[in-house]
Length: 243
Image (cartoon, rainbow, N blue to C red; front, side):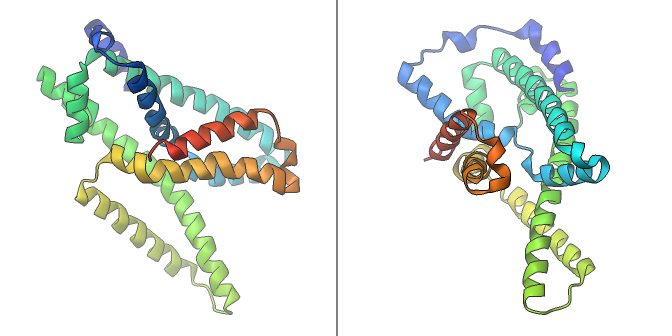
């Protein structure tokens, strides 16, 4: 759907974005503040643990090679399709329309539906939103459930208590559902929440801690490389970009 929409918008591309007056300082500031959003937009770390565990059970010692290859291919697809869609939307809308979409906290396809009075965009906006939210929810749910379950079980066993996994899973489902429901009901600014809260935490987990672990955990020493310098720099930009 993203690829089809991107191609459909090509005849409507214009140079409005390039005609806007922007200073070098504002441009660099915008790029600096965009990095935290990109960290979140392409993040799929919550599902990685379950993904790796499944491959480990199926492939054994060959799991690391296969997971790396799968992640590389899926990441290229994710970045390629998403960025093509982003560029196509940016080249179609004017700077004022993009600011309006951000202020209204609306998905970009809803703006196209209002702009062109084309119900296809209104329909696509709903389908894309449902698919994106559902896949994102289950991906994050898997990671959150695994983390909360491990924390609760370890604490219960440390205290000598019996563990009821069914009750724990029901409690985790209720907690996650109510939390997501509350955020949706409050209609929190998605971009603001990403920039100020989610992205810095993710950047710390995804960029800083793994590099730190390569120097502190013997089993991860083989992952030390000069590329880690780039990872640290990007992580620090993502963390400080929201402030």
